[in-house]
Image (cartoon, rainbow, N blue to C red; front, top):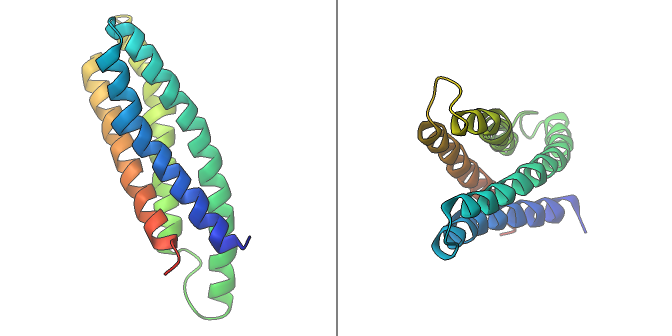
Length: 146
């Protein structure tokens, strides 16, 4: 499998996972589990798994795209920092900030600690997740063979 094809497949799988969790998994948990805290734990586990998977996917995709962009720049056909790399860096930023930075703050807010409410932090985290999904979908669309 070529690097271009591998990048298209990996970005498409990552986009599908983001959509499945955000549009199916988390809402289904809250719709079917009687206790909201149980549904929150199920959703939290899905988001945690996606965060680590997202880190891995972003790193692999970034390394592949960096190599491809460098070759194109050396051939005089583009920049070493292209739109795909910016999309990946944005998705990586959303993952790190939206999960790894905000999750501990959300846990503290749930315990009554910290200056922000759980609801406010949850809203910010959801916005980062939605933005990440848009960035990864855009990347998958750009990498799809024509």
